[in-house]
Length: 147
Ligand SMILES: CC(C)(COP(=O)(O)OP(=O)(O)OC[C@H]1O[C@@H](n2cnc3c(N)ncnc32)[C@H](O)[C@@H]1OP(=O)(O)O)[C@@H](O)C(=O)NCCC(=O)NCCS
Image (spheres, protein in one colour):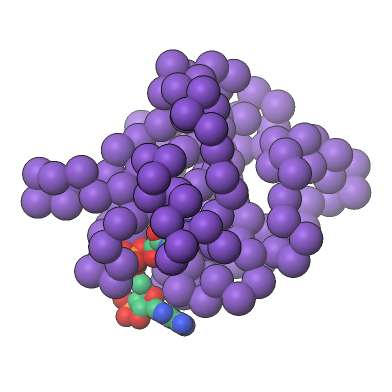
């Protein structure tokens, strides 16, 4: 995972984690979730999310990455995640951050029904805490019901 993350085609588009940070997410520490994305039975990428429903800030998709791009894998993986979040888990909001210029990721999010948003002033600090240190040029997007 860290090799994929550091690959030159990905490193400008997503944050970079150490092995220890990935392992903490795999262990589920602090409400973190670590999903393996499969395509035709093979590992194709991963998705990391933070479940922050208890603090009223929904489910935050921290990172999604697939090795082979533009085969529909990322869209289907996120769609499956949303189906689970809004179905089994009865979430009311799934959100994420996308860097300016990451047009492929933005296209996937828009296709699935995400829209740009800014949290209300009284809860903005909660969201800021969840999304840790975001890159300078980025925007939040969220979806509040599955398409
Ligand atoms: C973002 C990512 C997860 C999407 O997964 P994917 O499997 O490549 O995406 P899909 O094949 O499902 O869909 C890509 C869509 O983007 C569109 N697209 C590609 N490049 C585009 C561009 N420059 N502008 C607009 N749309 C673009 C494609 O046409 C396709 O849409 P369509 O199915 O309606 O034709 C994947 O590309 C990835 O791992 N990128 C690097 C890491 C990253 O950026 N993660 C997201 C951080 S917010």
